[in-house]
Length: 374
Image (cartoon, rainbow, N blue to C red; front, side, top):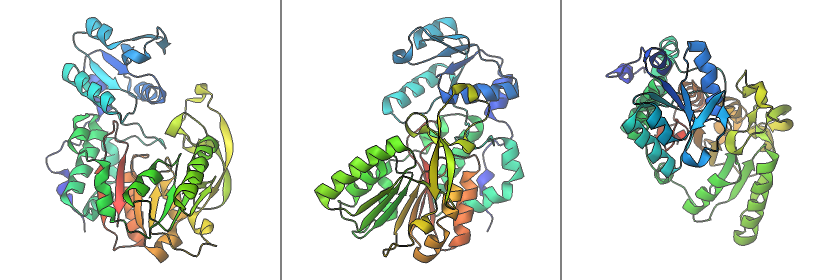
């Protein structure tokens, strides 16, 4: 059933890009990494021209970015009595989020949503052209807080105004109540990184679980994951299997673009036009969960998918497992501009009995916005 209450009391006709183009104020870019590159690329499309670049004090070392000297915040305040600050990096660190809030008290501040994967920007056109799907996804949400989060995240993605994210935050510890962990869980962690979710899961499950299967395509992260898994086997006797593959819908080899930390992704999902960054590409093996579980006697009870834009393909590759085992699912919903409707609608088509909860955990931009499916 459609639910048109999604649109009540919100403005949906102007994007952050339109605001920046017509604001009539100097525009100061806050940050100078990959996010800043993507934002500058979008500025060119909309005819937006920045006036300055600044960074947090610890990152200012007299260098420049795209021809702008990188200022510290104090110098920015001396240079401009009024401007629009454009946050162009991602962080979940409490002290950085507090700094963002302080900047927003001094200047108009936005954090434009640029997709981690794919080229589709979040615009009023995306809202209007896919309105039935937005409404269908909204109608699947199981509680009022999920509906509030959905609306606030959409407003953030459209306007870039960070207060929408701060209003709908919730701590990560709350999710484990939604998932109702038992002592015999079998976790499949797709996009395991170095084991951070596994560690959090085990702390909540009090290190009692049947099995863990962890998939990680990045070889450097996989080495750290393997060492962590070995320590769990030795100290707690946990049955844990690690595979150096990416979650996908079939077996094949693809090119992987290795970047710092969590930013690594499949080359086909990387933002176009940033070839000058000369990021190293390496071949990686990809596989479906259904194939990886063919020789497995146990049935997974919990799937986690955080695979940098490949969530749809990873779900397709988990189709038989989902139909057979009906596992609980932790599903990232922020890598692509249409993930918030595309992913829950696909899962609902597999299991109409699933209940969908949406939570946003402290992060700017809207990273760590996840569906919890039970």
